[in-house]
Image (cartoon, rainbow, N blue to C red; front, side):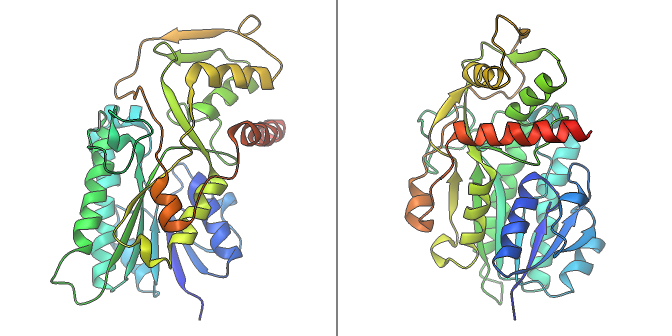
Length: 320
């Protein structure tokens, strides 16, 4: 019988792509999502959809009772800005929600968990590209909640009182982009924010001097890492970066987006604002471990992925 995979946040940007690839590879999938940022329309029709929130233990228990072989836990509050505005919600969703998942894994003896961690755990690192061994020093509430959740998951996997094998892998994802990313959410995804700005004829707003760097990795490459890891024992107990190692400054990103739409800074309004709380100056992934353990590396260059994503975004806006 095909393995039954639970994907929390499976109606969201990353989760829906992971679900598609799972279905393609023959897994049976249940998607659990509260649709706060995800869209049911993006859920693969061959997956079972359950509307629910990771903060709701009763709803989670009902899903786990259906017989789950592995959990891909992506559900979470992903905005740094919102984490400062509503830190209690950030904690409840990202950390306590993960604890709820862990409790259900223990209760139902689900032996495999893959967790969506974040590059924000590194804060402003001393080394770039940054390896997984870098000292964790998050500078946002969001980064703190993701690091806490990651440690809860990995410490749980080392507990000697469990009467079953529990294997955890965490992916510290860098700046994921691609189709289905929200074009209207002003709190996450700088590339999608810039695209949405131009498509709606709004000024682009850059915080700080724009020389802060970001490591953009295409969502299809990210999904492949997740699915490849499910049955790979080499990834058990590991924390793995998923990025490209090719940093791009926010200024360069702005220029690339404008150029793709036929504009330049001379013909389009670009405003600069003070840096935001929790903003990271340098972001670049050392992906040596992903290559070694998973045989994984990114296949889509940002220039190509950007063009594909912009073409998709234009079609979405035309339908809106």
